[in-house]
Image 1: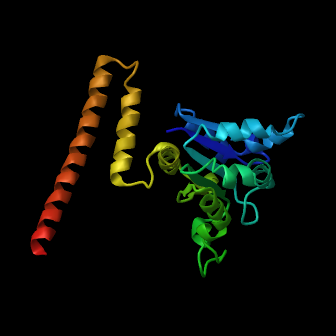
Image 2: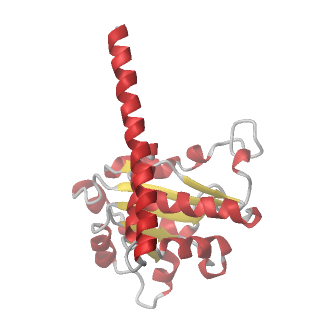
Image 3: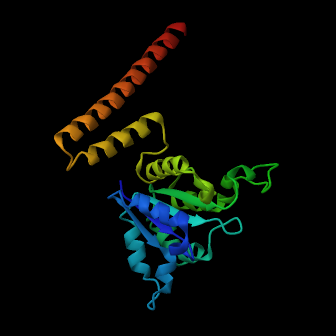
Length: 232
C-alpha cells in the first residue's frame, strides 16, 4: 500500500512536532510526503495536471496539519480548491475507493474537545467537512489521528506516538489487534535484512512468538463461536 502525506503548515521546518513526524515516516519506503506550502511558494505555481496524476498513484492520502481556528491552514483549502476539481472528483471519480486520513496536531489537550469541555465540540465534529469531501469523492474516511500537546510529551509518550503514527500511515484499517500484529511482523521482517545471523534469529523468535499468540487468539475465537452456536 502506498501513502501520500499532504502537509499544510506555513512554518513546517520550524515545527518540532512536524519534524518529529517527518523523521518517523522516513523509515517507510511506501510513504511519500509533500509540503503544500512549498508548492505555492514556487515561481511557476502549482502544476494541476502533475498533482492530479500523482494522487492516483497512492492508496491512502493523509492531510496533515495543525488545527488553526478549528480547521486547517489556508494552504490546504487552496490546494483542495485548485486540485480537486468537480470533473476530477465527481465526473471521473479519480479518488474513488482510496482512503482519506487526517493527522491533526493540537496545542490544547484533546480532552478539551468534547461537549461540556473548554472547546465544546469534538475533533470529529470540527473535521466533518473533510469527511463530507471523502464521501463525495467515494473515499473511505479514516478515524482522525490526533497529536495533542507534543511539547509536553515525555520520551515514552513520544515512542508510543511514533509507533501509532507509523501504523496510521501504513497498517490496514480499521486498526485491530490482528492488523497491528500483522503490521509489526512486516516491520520486523523488513529489519532482518543486513543483520547478523544471531540478530536475525532473535528477530525470528519474536516474530514466531507474535504469530503463536495470534493463532491462540484465533483458536479462542473459534471456541467461543462454537459454544455460542451450541447455546443457540
